[in-house]
View: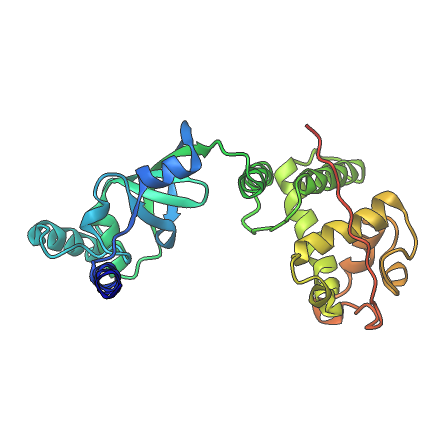
Length: 286
């Protein structure tokens, strides 16, 4: 018994004292069954999202600092080049969901992180996670939403199909903008206007009401989708709270018109007596 205890303690100590490494791409690839690829081209990637390496994960610690046995001269030259503002070739990254792994350019990434750079130019190949988990489905629905809208803001929904509902909202808003003007409106332009004049004002009203405190496992974006669906699509009256009907017209464009001339500091608050709200699922279009 004592020997087993001592052996367990020795293993635990070795694990704690062992140098930590960045993530291994191959390990995470196996976990996600991510083998199908899409070439995403060259773009800038936040350094904080680069969490691992394809072949050299043992050479860097969890903060992507090189281990002592690596060639110091090359690393110093790269840091000097970055300090001088010289343009270096894009690094090559593999991507699984929102995490990136260095295929080529490990030292450039390490040097950029050490110099407190925020991002780096990279050529990206994305590996598609094949496992049909809720997390993966929502991730790719978000990715599709972001790609279609071009919005730089992250909207986090927790139910399948809700991103399609928001795309339908933007499509309806695009038709409204084109109907009220003489020029065609691109979908990404409609998305920007929708976000600024419809989504953000309603989200601020929901936030001011403190509704999120009643639903700890939901997000503000969830509540936006539920309230806007009931108010503008289902047309159900007072099934989800007191005061919403008074503050939010039952037409999306009427709400936009109402809020256009209202500064954010003057957004109304829903009554604090709100205690009931019916959550519902929206089935996305295939």
